Structures are given as C-alpha cells and as structure tokens.
Image (cartoon, rainbow, N blue to C red):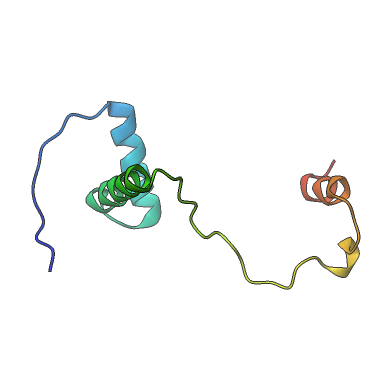
Length: 81
C-alpha cells in the first residue's frame, strides 16, 4: 500500500488554476491530477519516449458513405466545408 506524503511547492497561478479546472472536470482531486501528471512526466523521462494514451473508439471503420473516399472528402464532411 502506498503511503501519501505531504509536500509544499510553489506553482504558477495559471497552472494551478488549470489543474483545478481539470480536476473538477474529471471529478477527481487536485492531488490525483498532479500525481497523474508527475507519473507521466517521470515515465517519459525514464523511457525517453512520448507515451500516447489509447484514444481508440469502438466501431467498424468507415461507413458505406465514405468507402473509398479520400481524406479531403472525409475532412470536408467532418468540418462542414
């Protein structure tokens, strides 16, 4: 079991405000947001790599409407241009 450790640090006000907003939006604590951010930074530093989170969604690929369509047509439909 991990034992929480208290610490004090000075943060830029805009960063703290953004972190608090992120915590509220995610329904978690500021401490959880800061811990997750630090873990990500430490992992990136140790591996020397950027770790992209899995943002894939369930689905079966393109709909019949876009089968064989090029990127410009798909982009135009998505952005309404």
